[in-house]
Image 1 (tube, rainbow, N blue to C red):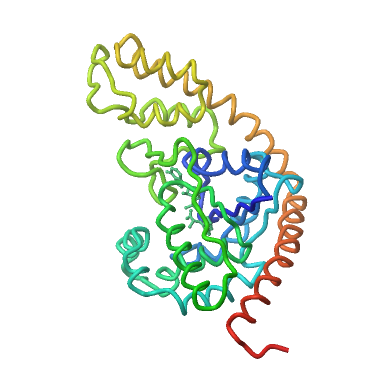
Image 2: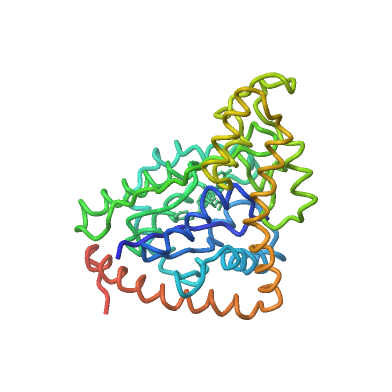
Length: 326
Ligand code: AMP
Ligand code: TRP
């Protein structure tokens, strides 16, 4: 079976951008692929973070993945630092990765701008660790949001460089994008993200979600209720495509273009459909919070299974490199 790998950072509240851009398709893909999903704690320490809460946020991230429908029966779920081969392979990949490639990564440039006081080596090396995450499992497919595509392309290049020098060990992984790979924040301008206060949290209460949706920016050219709108310019419509059925989308599209429905009506429909999907997730998360030991066990057992695969790959890698190894 073809293998999938993807990861999520335990950096803060998981939002509907994460869900729509990534996690929702992670769950769908479990039906056809051998899936490995990882809470990437070593990526999270490349920026300033709160030491006191990292552990709990790591567990909570695992909890949310389970609440969304992942389970040890359909995938392997684990914490990155529990399988140290990821960092070992990173070192080796460092030796085939041109610095120039890392310097031109958009995410690195953005984060370096945001964290001028701490532009550390790890921040620059972040995509190499990401390549190691994927390739240590020889995963061929990586479901991510659009912001990660450049990193996956770099992973392909690292695989290619490694293979041509040390023997064909790694596949060249491809990104898999969801139908809504880039969700903007409620500001309608920036990508929805944990670091900006423009997100709708996956587990926020209904009232808060509605308040955020109600006031979210739509198509900026639609000023008056009677102005026709353009769905493809509207972030709310993009979110609709993830939560609403095709017939609803057609109606919204028609109604928006002809101004027969207004933005608030459109948002009400979205809210209802969102809640249909998010209510069960919230309930499951509440139940899992009462059984945190289960979540921890899932993560620990997931790491055991992943360790075995990672160890095998490292044996091949060491042999390809020509290391002396007992
Ligand atoms: P992160 O929270 O940065 O670890 O991201 C986890 C996953 O969510 C990655 O696959 C991202 O590409 C995806 N993602 C994050 N923000 C968004 C967004 N605003 N729209 C779509 N996908 C996103
Ligand atoms: N960099 C990814 C993000 O911020 C998270 C990540 C780490 C990842 N390792 C990965 C995604 C490997 C896919 C594959 O979203």
